[in-house]
Image (tube, rainbow, N blue to C red; front, side):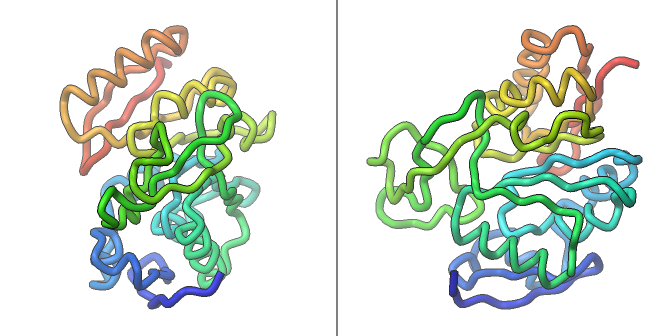
Length: 232
């Protein structure tokens, strides 16, 4: 895919930023040479140990250089991005940094395999960019049909997963249900976009209802994220 873009750099690496996204928050941060959610990245880098990181949606791969560099030699970063422009930019970010331990798939994730609508712009034409999200109908602005798969199908059996990080614009519950094997076998640290207390409590209750045997507890919030650890 050809698209106009700029290359940005910060302490972790280089990033392909489509011009179409220039007014969004993350591209503006990268354009200034800064790091998006630096505290979250530092914590994930410290906690990963010898395991894999599952993270998505990838957007333009703004987390990739920092997390890739923290992985053990045989570990992988497994990610997904259903927006075609964001996926293409993330691929270029991977190439710019010569990253060889990343598996990136052009899909959305959910509880089961399906085809759903991804909103690329709101009604009236306002681009959502990093906020592209799954919607119920094709009438919600500009949408495209995308493949949805469970995360359990993206992560090979037997992989050790240390961290599961999800920022999927309100589709987190479905994504977690589709990662049942990964969660039950690995009990990874779970990082969810949940800025408000009610969101953090909602996810804690959801984890208790659906993954109660793992004993997940809320361990605090930072930036826009909530962190959950399993007992033991």
